[in-house]
Image (tube, rainbow, N blue to C red; front, side, top):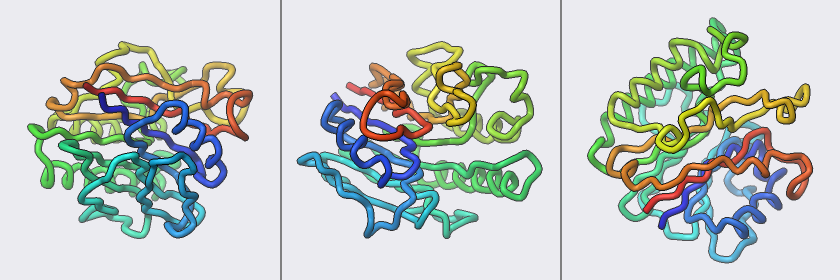
Length: 258
């Protein structure tokens, strides 16, 4: 069995005790982290025995990392053609026969903004790299915070979000191009929707009201998707009453493969 997690921790230093407890409780083989918000030499090393980390960090914002209890090969930070190469948003590595790409997509802020246009350019560049450097007949996992809700089933109130950033047509079309190339949304192999959600804003009691979005995704090529046995959102990690300190505004996504 192979267990992989993707989790936007919204500052790994703020969430280090929570991350250690999660590692000890679930014993994943690999964790893809986003929004670590820390330089590589300041990353808090996991306190759980057997785990190592590979960081692609940035001070105060962005940042991605891989935490694994196995040796990773061919670790690559960033990707060729990135239109914002100073932003730490992609880290990839091989775990056995599986190539894993951990990503943190540009947020986009609002439709029509400069940040939104950068988001579309970034997604175009990511798509080109995935298609040119990888093959849909090889086991590949692309996981992380995509900042895109793929369909209306991934939004608590689709009418309120129609045409907005995170749910706009151009974003969804770029995600769709990755799926058409040969990636499968693993959540939808096991759960038809609506939901489950992975993100709830800190404001207005969104978590308790069920005002969630599914923007943390795990996409796999068919050779790996065929090995997928379960995909679950660990909602406890989003509860203010659970765990060590304040939770992230995202919950971990736990992926299990044969």
